[in-house]
Picture (cartoon, one colour):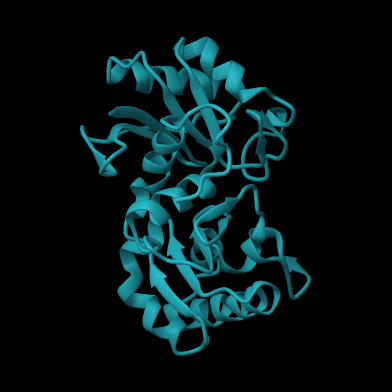
Length: 254
């Protein structure tokens, strides 16, 4: 079964149809820059344009970088604040016509990794972290998702962690890989104290550069750390997979 997955990010909105049985994209990913300001209707117009690009009219999964409950946005740390209290599910349905499932972007990436990637077959506590404009997070216990975690806002040295260790922070502060990995290792250690995870999965765009930082991290933490295997397609794949599930299955057991 092919389902359209669309991943909304701070710099780009990308989508593709997904074979939800294999986790593979069935067409080349299509990306459009995120409008600025990223107002709800402007973003929804882009989502509609991506759906039209693929001539898609069926079920669609859409990620959003914030807390999502029953399709409603409850936080918008890295997008326009006008999203807060917006019924994103209804908004996207009005633009697309078909059924729409909306979920947190990191949760979607986590679903993809647990079903097809680095977390496949893993029991215990698995934490996925995506490093980009901010830090997204997803946590699973024996394959079951606890939605809407916001570990990027964990306080490290009196600042939100994402202000110190996101990819944006690394670029703005011109940190080399050693300097950045020290900060990330400190962050992982704090999460380790709180959750005693069995595995960290590092996702987002940085997963393409895992060879530059992963050895530095694994030398400084007692918990196994692996790079995400689905990379920047994880959000698209996870959104499509959740959209393919029967209504009511909001907390997937992978």
